[in-house]
Amino acid sequence: MPDPARRMGDLISEFMKEPAIASWMALRDVRERWVELAGAVVASHTRILTLERGVLKIEVDSSPLLAELATFRRDELLRKLAEAFPAKRVRDLKFVAGSWKTQPPGPGAGGKRGGPAR
Image 1 (spheres, rainbow, N blue to C red):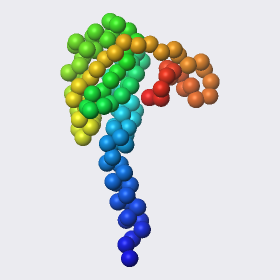
Image 2: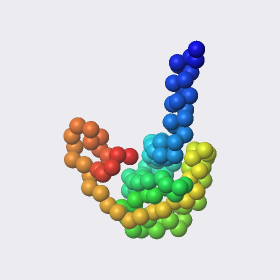
Image 3: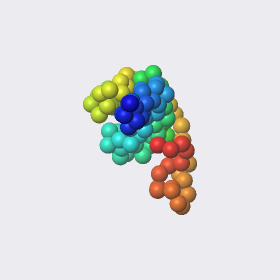
Image 4: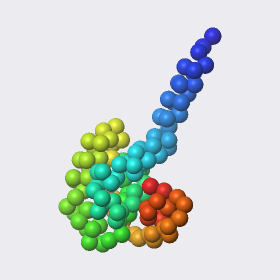
């Protein structure tokens, strides 16, 4: 009789390989380490939006910073992402202009900017 724990482990492993789940987990991992990878100042003016087909989409709340990131810092950020997540294969960055309001202080706000969860 097959070991139920082993079978469950196999099922979980297969589930984690599903593209949608793998992409969601990769996005979560990048969001969790974004301050470390981009630096506190850049992270405070950016928000990770999506990771699709190897392209990390990042919202930037300042046009000058967007231009700096897209022109001068892209290669540096790609290198840091590749070092931090070699299996994730982030192959490009797409910076988009945007802004979001600061959440009012309260339970769960944690001083982070509003919008979708990081």
